[in-house]
Image (tube, rainbow over all chains, first blue to last red; front, side):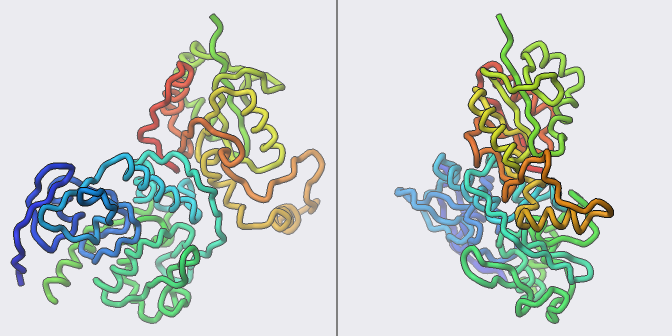
Length: 239
Length: 175
């Protein structure tokens, strides 16, 4: 079924851009050749605004809004790049790096990590906040895959790809605030999560080395997210 | 006219950042023409001198001695550069931070020993509770992340700093 939506236009960095009702600012901007930084967006999966990197200034007052969950409106003006937004985005990345133990040098995803690449792209060369160095576990129970909480940024891409594409919902978040933690089923070891089909979509969806294939050495874990978007598209077509 | 004074220091790191500096190969000749290396693991100087223009510090701050040296270095340096991920983030040395120091020493030197099991105390500096990055102890002027930072990035940064310019840090990444 093709939904007919109304043609509208928005302003991105002052430039008038045609788009359609029902799209998010992130989608409309990307289609117009203005990519917006994000870590929690994954093509084909519903957005939740978890990472906040895609915040943009909207309207004349420059109110901050996450581009991935804010729908376009006719005549809406959007600023993607400003000194204020750059400062906030750097701060977000620094907080993510300080929150857990991101040791790039020994990570399976070194060189292929979206968080690492985002830090480099935003010019983050140090973290002004005291590192927390929390004591976090690694779930090695599963036969083929590993979950390392030290590297998790709580983007919930794994949660959503499992629920929305695989149709299972093994993963979810437990706890609040700084204690928020990814859990499988009812906070069981991954191998004991009886709903898990071992499909590995969560591993491919993960932007960091938090979910990885076993047996990978430093820098060997290369993820592929394009097949997830294709699978999501097929599922959408069937529904 | 005398050359600007350059120093390099090795705290709790693997020396990989210094190896990256040495990987400049013939580029070291250019560097030698631009600066006077007054203190370094690869130079013969017992004391950290006064009035150093640029100091590169590799490694995290892991012991009381590291912290004392870093404070002395800061007081005698105009531009302090955190060289590499250990100096910038704590990196691998900080992976011990979740284990209490006494438990750590017990595990390594007693439970892990085949012979002569005892925690060494003579001639070794007491460890701090955690290994932490330089800027949590003293102000750091420039961070050069990387494990190690690429040789050319180190050379470019030193070149800029010796000429009093802010270094361009594009394309530097952690790890």
